Image (cartoon, rainbow, N blue to C red; front, side, top):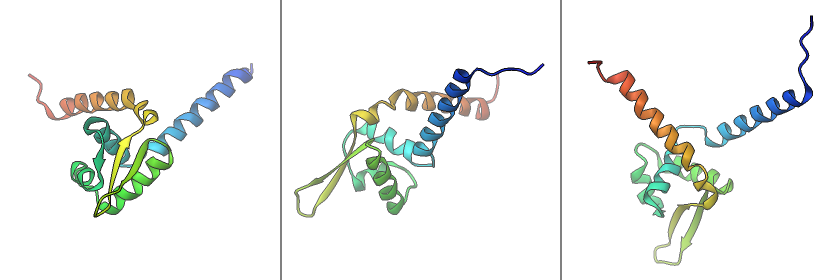
Length: 121
């Protein structure tokens, strides 16, 4: 007997998978979540301060990732009228909607490290 799949379930499944794909493409890579988390924790930061905070990232990569995050309205870039010109970055209200995801990733990572690296008693 052939199993019937309702159109609505199939449509909802496709929409969910597309949403997951979109989210993973936006947040993929080694750096974006670290940049977002840093800006959430530290607040507004100048480019060089952010470069120091995100351990191991190159200036060129940070610039690229910030452009992508700004294009997706997760990060706001402000050019300050100073000599020399400074640029500040901060998380947007829309970017703050990722806070629960960042917290859950952090909590999972802490538990994962415990599981792998701590010796059982």
